[in-house]
Amino acid sequence: MAAVTKPAGSAPHAVYVWEAPVRLWHWVMMFAMFVLFATGFLIGVPPPTVGGEAYNTFWFGYIRFAHFAAGYIFAVFLVLRVYWAFVGNKYAREIFLVPFSLFTAKFWKGLFSDIFFYLYMKKEPGSYEGHNPLAAVAMFFMYLLGSVWMILSGFALYGEGAGMGSWQHSWFTSWLQPLVGDSQQLHTYHRLGMWYLLIFSMVHMYMVVRQDVFTKETIISTMINGWRVQKP
Ligand code: HEM
Ligand code: HEM
Image (cartoon, rainbow, N blue to C red; front, side):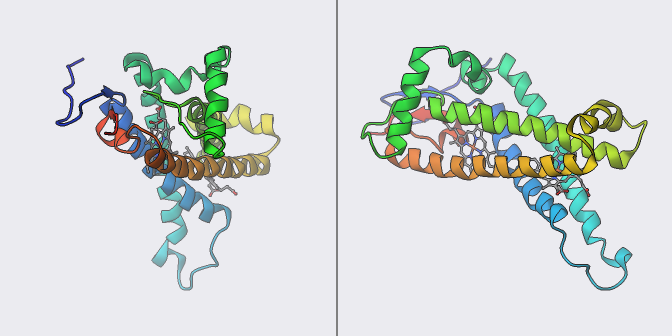
């Protein structure tokens, strides 16, 4: 991979953490997820019928179309993100390797240190080039597993509409629907998944802003230009 140059004035210490594909994935995925939250919520709790001829407005059609388009983008970008975990730098692998970190004492020490820091019971934050252990745990158990569930259940719901014989039905609906019970259960668990991811997203946004204010390294700008820079 091409060498990366430090941004001007980045001394004394700067590490190139998030490569361009990870940053691009992060912001595209975030935008797709916002569309999925908004349209998914409207699908689950539909607005009262709009007056006039349905074909003159087609509002619900557009809402569902936006949900499916964002769903495809979300799924394709997650697959690309997994690919980048193999070919990217060591930080690109972090969130996928959390289950292995659980066996190291260093990880647990860092996790509790982070929890105490967030609870205002400890003054000094830990210093990390990649994610802190608390962020990594949430990213694996909430974001990653939550997203995989939304993609599996989303395509299984899609297969119901596309019908038997479609690839969505054969690959997803045919086994997942009987596994969870029936179509209604599938809707319910897909909807619950939204709240799981919504909680993650809201806490995550609070945490990154808080980290940026309280810690000695840059946080939010790192997801924009890639560099973790020690603050003066
Ligand atoms: C962050 C990811 C996602 C969120 C938050 C989300 C949210 C939702 C919600 C809340 C509903 C309404 C469920 C109900 O109460 O009936 C829904 C329905 C649905 N979603 Fe998703 N979804 C996501 C990803 C996906 C993906 C990846 C697909 C795949 C294309 C998908 C396809 C569908 C389909 C087919 C329906 C049913 C539409 C209908 O019954 O009219 N979703 N989604
Ligand atoms: C739907 C909303 C969002 C979701 C689901 C989300 C998800 C994620 C995930 C999964 C990562 C891990 C990246 C990796 O290691 O591959 C991450 C990192 C990050 N996100 Fe978000 N994000 C969201 C919104 C935001 C927003 C609005 C901001 C900025 C205000 C933000 C700032 C960051 C930063 C700074 C990191 C790197 C944190 C670190 O250095 O430890 N995110 N995000």
